[in-house]
Amino acid sequence: MTDTIYDLVIIGAGPAGLTAGLYAARARMKVLLLEKAVPGGQIIVTDWVENYPGFPEGISGYDLAEKMKTQAEDLGLKIETAQVHSLKLSGDIKEVVLKEKSILTKSLIIASGASPKKLGIGEDKFMGKGISFCATCDAPFFRDKTVVAIGGGDTAVQEAIFLTKFAKKVYLVHRRNELRATKILQERAFANDKIEFVWDSVATGVDGFFGIEGVHVKNIKTNEEKTIKADGCFIWVGILPNTEFVKDSVKTDEFGFIVADAKMQTSVSGVYVAGDVRDTPLRQISTAVGDGAIAAVSAEHYIENL
Image 1 (spheres, rainbow, N blue to C red):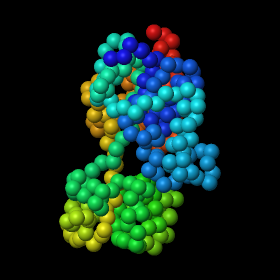
Image 2 (tube, helix red, strand yellow; image 1 turned 90 degrees about the horizontal axis):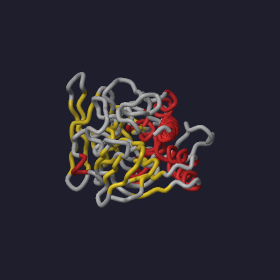
Image 3 (tube, rainbow, N blue to C red; image 1 turned 90 degrees about the vertical axis):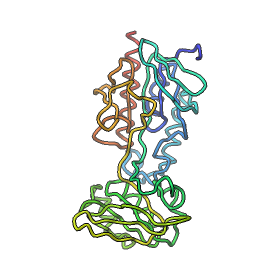
Image 4 (cartoon, rainbow, N blue to C red; image 1 turned 135 degrees about the vertical axis):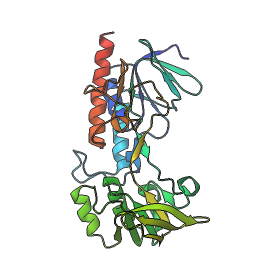
């Protein structure tokens, strides 16, 4: 355990965490941001962002993440690579437990984000061998090949469109008979002759030995089953909160997302939440940024009143 006591520790360096860090550093708080991987969160694997204000021509997710990180660091934010194992939140001083040490802080912001949900169709066996959750990362491996994309929301449709830059054919499998994605993305998908829609259907398994050779699909209305011959399978069917380290430290909803009020205050005094890990009706870069700003200001006010 270190002797240093921070004003604020932030867990997670996605848009929410970086924004919180920016606000805290600018307020001259003694703040530390912990990130187990690469700063930027899921946006670093997003091909193109065109709905974030201030970039009318759009911007790559990686570039946007880099700009956020650079701006926060220029204001004095300290970012440390570390994975949080658990939290001890009783008392005025909170303890963030890492592998080899613990960090003490007066307040805490959990901005650990969320991860793609698995279908249980062979993701563990074929991860990196045909199954992927990231078109931006892996689409070039499927140049002039056939792939299956699963999902019907914004991410699934946007990534399926991106896949057509490389793949010769993209089958988009969706369990409903209409997409949930925003209208502009739907229009682009329907206008793309490389995309074929497989409606009212779910993926039930995959074929393959060294890699994917086919995806088993079942129509949930007729129970008809078929196998789509494909070299890859991309899955976008929702997300799960990254809250393994939280356990029962704070109140969560039935899906594990952290519950908070309008000030991002969780069930524990001095502990705040921001971004995709929060129980929220919308998970976008813009909402994550707003969460981060509110959480940082709330933490600042909390410390002033200790």
